[in-house]
Length: 232
Image (cartoon, rainbow, N blue to C red):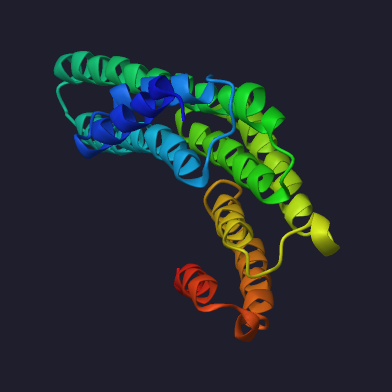
């Protein structure tokens, strides 16, 4: 491995251990744009960088919304007005940061990572990342824009799901970790974004029932991975 590339990876891991997710994202971006395929640990590192950063903004948004809800109950109109306006302005900063980061993760998958891959498993992994960040982005937009992003997430989840479910060697077995993780996140999307809990339960149950029926054929390492995902 080239020393410069290894340095990016080492620095990204250090940034992760120090919870410096802004730095980690910058390094993950450089790694994605390096022009070479990522190994499985590197793919997880890329995903973790963007997920941790956006996760912090999602938590911040919930806190601000909670405070905003309480401030809107203040009886003094003048005091309520300036506090609510200040909170809404701050809310806009948080949503702006998160949306830009979600869009960047999707762009890097589309332009730098997916084009390098022919493996169905890796392509499913990247499509899941793309769909996940579209799903996260629905937390930071409203109205028609939110519906558009949700539609894009649905289409990407479905593309990944169809690829994973292809028959024969072109697809992934029901016990494959990437396929199970995809099914779980797709179900979360149906439940949290589309508000279709029945559809979410059916999707998750079908995926895991298929996996359970084949678990006795797995080697110990893959059995443990599948069991862990099934317990979720």
